[in-house]
Length: 106
Image 1 (tube, rainbow, N blue to C red):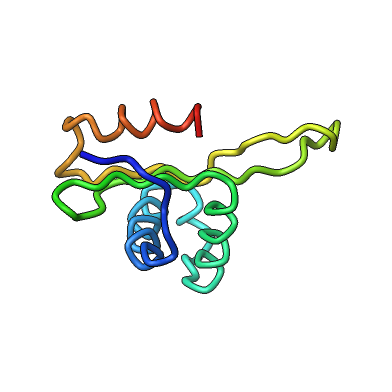
Image 2: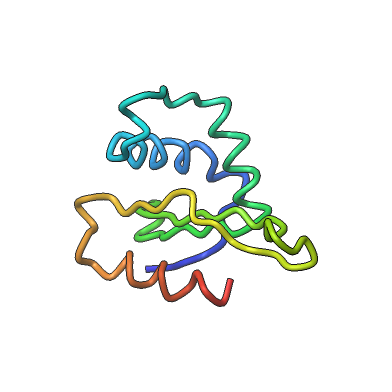
């Protein structure tokens, strides 16, 4: 298992994991998952923190945060979780824990 920063070449895999994540959220009740919008969001997360979990050369999980100026003090940055996903067949493998442990230092 390898945790690493997402690369531009990971965009399609992250887009698909994002689609599965989105389907589990309350957002899916009132909005559509728009590939173009989410691709821009992936770029923003890659500028912030976008980690992927790779097992046997296959991406099985991801955690994405945007990093923006803090709303009450723009001299400070704050990170906001956007998407978090581990494929159901990999849940329990330690992928989620590994992503969580890697997020703080990133």
